[in-house]
Length: 459
Ligand code: AMP
Ligand code: ZN
Image: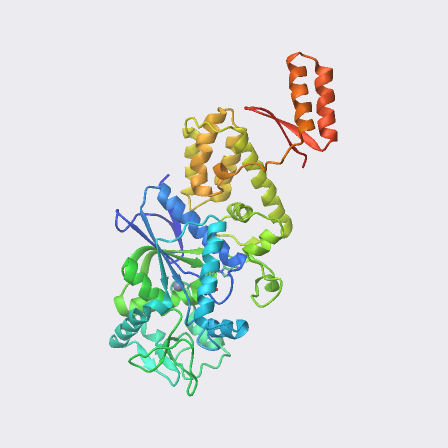
């Protein structure tokens, strides 16, 4: 099956055809680095990682760009309230620049722990202020902006198809709104450039043709994606919350300036559902990768947990289901390990089934079921290993790296094992069983592997 992906813009499953056969452009909205990423955020990055791996499996050379939002994202997700970075600075007593660096590094560490491939290009909003000013100027020249006392705004009523991505009912929204829209002409208008408040020195502010201030949140993605991937590229991704505001506004900016919808495919990962407290970055319960590690959960088990749900369905978080994922992963690792280290031939039939699912809009739950079918199939261990290694290029579970924990087995236990082996050779089953029972009574168990019997601590 050829690769098909669900495009939120057209609301349909479409065959993926690259705009340029040599290189697929992928832009994924990155983190706002005012705190650690929570495990919900990371579900979106895991979905995007699967997409990237599936594109690579299909032979595409992917140029993956991810931004770091280190300025301009206001607490309200709109145009009011404090900048998240300045708020983070107050919370920690560190400068906005320091926390940006701290949480960017922590984010990159999280990606490594989850075996998420790093983007080809990282780009920070604060490194691209001029590019953002240039796009705002372009939108202004085309006649889509107006000025208020706090910034330069985009007049969304001037765009014919504003809100199409989210199928926004603009008139209904406007009629039902109880929000004070201040000086904004339309409820959906948004800031392209915000002025620094009168008499207040922000930590992050720049000069611009309109006055000292900082860029609006959405403009960074329009400016940086256009810089690195062009004004119409293959795929743009983010979490589902980006559909009605952030991505809708990125499209508005790009349409106003370049006349394009920015990307050929718009893809969105659905939310991990956690209680408010487990996601609220100010609460003590706020869950991040380190919280999983503290509970004895391997970050890769969190990856496994996510692979068992389709990216376009909501996923409920619970510790029970995460423990279940850890058990499933342990079982898969041990099974893989038991096949030994020799790889044979890839089984074409099983591979075809696997690819059928991954190419059908990244249906990982079904693909994972094929991986389990493989463990139960009657092909040789070496062929199982070779086939599973190909699957793992997509699953990213690092199966080949895993080794059972080795423990120092006391000499007397090894002696008993030796006696058991001798007894079995001599077909003295009673003695062999007695040795096995003694080994077990001492808290160990025997595992018969292709390389001979081994003892390990009983679980
Ligand atoms: P932020 O750091 O807040 O800009 O968000 C980073 C990414 O996480 C964005 O793509 C969001 O859409 C996504 N996101 C936020 N909350 C969740 C959640 N509960 N589940 C999945 N993705 C989320
Ligand atoms: Zn973005």
